[in-house]
Length: 453
Image (cartoon, rainbow, N blue to C red; front, side):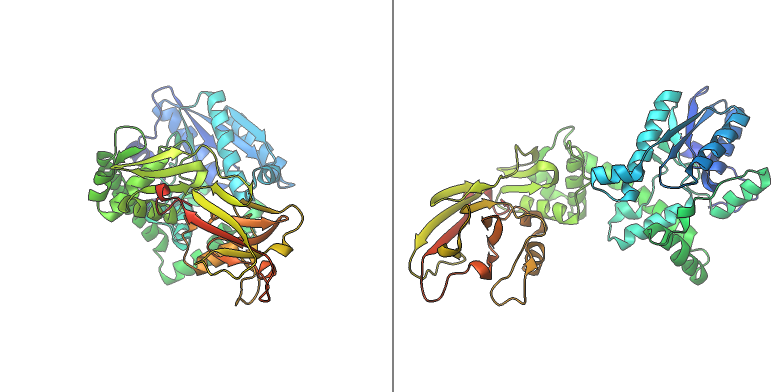
């Protein structure tokens, strides 16, 4: 971060190729707060010297009574300086509910959608956001707490596609000094003081403590992110040399010759080439793929309907036709989701490995069905201390998170009766004194490999 009296973003912008072509335009995302007002005024001033123009975009999130005040403030500022200004109003809470995501995630998505529409409308070459050094440090710390890898610790990139961040190495003190020096006003977002939001809590409570312990904490974190970002580029170049020119299939031999860390990055890069991308993928998915590459062959079901396949000497990622559906479970053999399921009836006790055994007299109201376990469903297993979720039971037994969502679950009249290989719920267990039993033997199909589930 710079400590000089004046604010000079031009070297940083040139280093990261942020300047538009002569006569071009930068669209500046403006909330009306300190950071975005600093950026808008700076770019407007710089543009008149460097032969480019500036436009502004402001999004009303529909969450605060003072939101219209912010709209008018930004519009008036732009009108006084002849800056084109696009404003848009959306309801973040409504979209969060519609998309099934949190308020913060919905707001982020909507902002960037709004920015891109405004960029098309104003014929802008790029979109500038006001992320600064404190934002960078907070992001790195949040990613560290979430257990992210080196990519997350590299923080916010200065440039991502059409998005540029000219203030990324600028401190909050430099921003405030710039506003004071040029007499630029701003508005305050009351939600910035809401400690129920994780980032606010970090900014208001944790960062001040870190600065007390080490005054240069913010700068040190940002320098670490910069180092990791450079190393990430090095990793990326090495991965690109190993990957095929296009597609999501490659030789297993090539993957196995890579060091472990580079192999995981290669798998991540292959996932990025799929239509669904890697947003819903975590470390468990890449590690499961790595084990598949090492194994005798098989398949692995992944988020977004993607299947990882090892066939012969090839590893590939393919789009799955469809997820296994719930089917009626009848006497005889049923094939489901890479499993062979045999249902038999008996009047005698059965000891057959980990077969699921149910009391036939307790199966009423529509018989048995076989399908994936519904989210939140649980079992009360013999010897347990109560009903526990299937997710927790799988974690306790060390079952792969990638696999557990596709384990065969047996439902009786819509109620979960058993899950293979966890066992049968106490409510549906057969009586010790006899009675008719239902025996369900489940085996993985040999052609599916060890990860077919």
